[in-house]
Image (tube, rainbow, N blue to C red; front, side):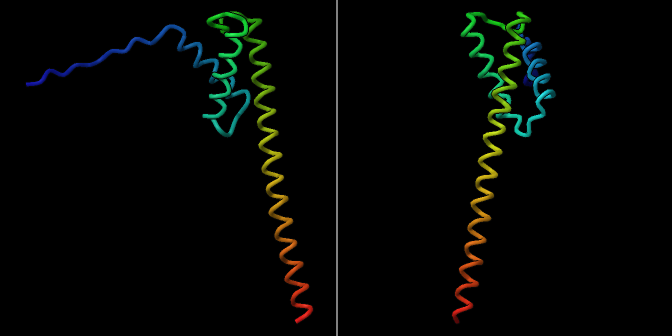
Length: 111
């Protein structure tokens, strides 16, 4: 008879505050793409840690405030870039439809 074993995993130090910070920023920004926002969150956090030569900026309120501000700026910048790209592609699509309709009208006039 095989013994059943229940593995117990120890939660790493710092995981809970890290995930709480991520959840807080997600609630603040209300992103539509959670994965990309989380990627931005962790990349920005890593940049701030490296720039300030500190392991955990969550323990430094002034550094965390700076991180939050930079994260929000970057998120809104990327969000605006995506909006501009999608509106640009929508405009191109509309222009193509208008041109096709106009050409169809011109061709039917001469037939």
